[in-house]
Length: 424
Image (cartoon, rainbow, N blue to C red; front, side, top):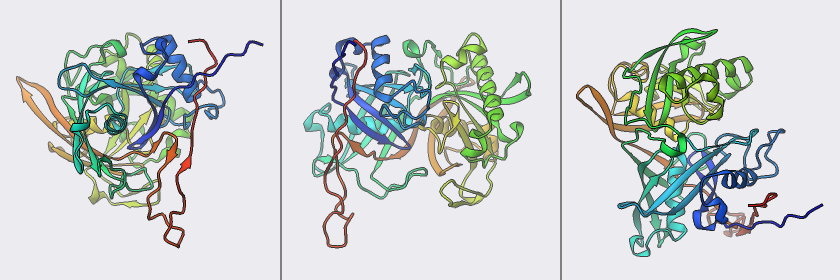
């Protein structure tokens, strides 16, 4: 048997919001994988541990959910007014597929921190104490994201009091600004939106879905191409948790069928069968008016705490919280009267909205404007919790004490090596 030598590639395993990903600097990748194509996809699939028919990803860095089966490639930007370029790949767990058609809003916070920590930002730009604004060119959707990265003693700040539904521990806050977040997938997604927030020109469409009937839907292109439907029209109250959806194969098939027909209406695909080849976009979510519910962690969420309820699916499963890009779509749609999101929130145009998801609540704002009967979004703003960093060492806060004033856990080596079983 021929032995194929391992390929050792510098990488960082980082969280961001409710997601985790393996991050690479572009120039650290093997030459064949520095461009889009089969070599890159094969490498990233091997790193994550896909495709895995056992759906465990034991052989890779994936975490067996769409939130943790991700890769990000970052490089210095040659584009004026930008610091770094970012390319996001959503890796399928059980299929040999890397979907390049969209962004990950959660990991946008991490891109800024990775850039500062990885030497991709000029040292004179980094304050001793304060905030460094990292301007990111998001290559998947060809848009600008500004990550406001906190710095303490000349290093990125990770500890803090920012809490996020779906995450157990607080950390530092990273403010994100998504500038003109109407998506343009271009070369990576094989789709050009022509700058249309509503691809059909309507804020509410009617979808005729076989086996389901006529459904009202808001088809919006902001953050990520997203399909919003009313929870009540598909048999839900809007307070569902993961097990209520994911344990029901019929429900998953029904929602995926709606997604496919929404994708067709949005012009993302030419035939409904093509939806399976781009599972990351469009996203689909269902909305409902405020109601009391119990989050996955057992916390009681009162109707008075939220403007509406949102349940979003990611890669064919109910997300345990909500993706950052869908949050942008929620915030944008809530600011425009007449969308299903705005109607679920009471019918008013809200420049700032707090919505309930399976793990808690999230606040997002959007600045929109109507020009000649066309809606545009100037920017969307939200904050994410700073990520954990794992690039060979785990740094534990000094207040994690064993009762004698010393850290309970010191600096533990957690090196990981991504191996290759193919020729690049």
